[in-house]
Image (cartoon, rainbow, N blue to C red):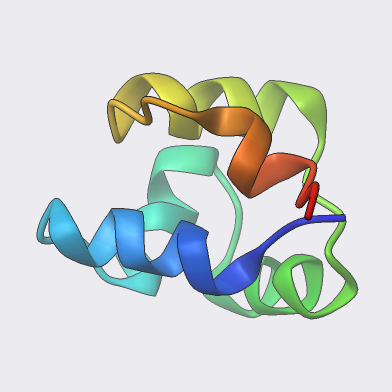
Length: 66
């Protein structure tokens, strides 16, 4: 399950907002919002975010193992 709060913290730390992230992924901000709400980003989308946001520990964010 996606940890939305950690993901949002990563993009805020890099100076991005939700609209910027949606553009990176090639989707609308509304679609991104729905995906985050459902916790359902695809593998390709996760790979883009890991790369663009320089995420160091993606397992913590994208698999929410606690």
